[in-house]
Amino acid sequence: MSGGIKYGDVMIHGAIFVRRGGKKKVMVRHGKKRWAFGEVTIPLADRMMIFFEQNVYGDLSSNFFRHYLQEIRARTILGVGKQ
Image (cartoon, rainbow, N blue to C red; front, side, top):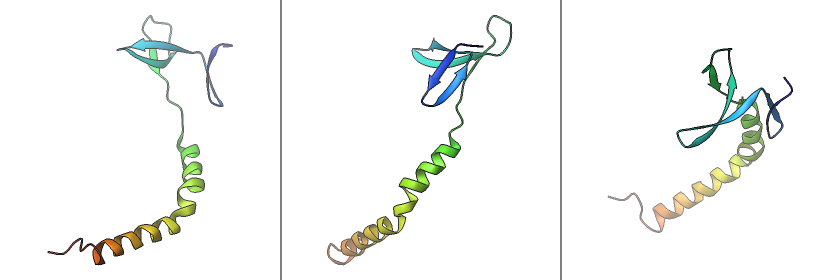
C-alpha cells in the first residue's frame, strides 16, 4: 500500500480519515467486507516514558522540596490543618 496518513513521525499505511458522530477519526480497513473498518491506535507508551523521564522525573526532587516548603509555611503561618 502506498497511501496512508502520517502523524508526527509515525506513518500509518492504508489509513483514512472518517467522520463518525461529528468527530474525525483515523480508520483502517481490516477485510474485504463493506464495513470492515477499525479505529487506529498509535503505541505511545515508550515515547511517553521518555518524555516523563526527561521533563517530569528529572526535576522531581526540587519540585517536591518546593511543595514541601509551601506546605510547612501554610501549616505554621496560616494555621492550615488546625482544628
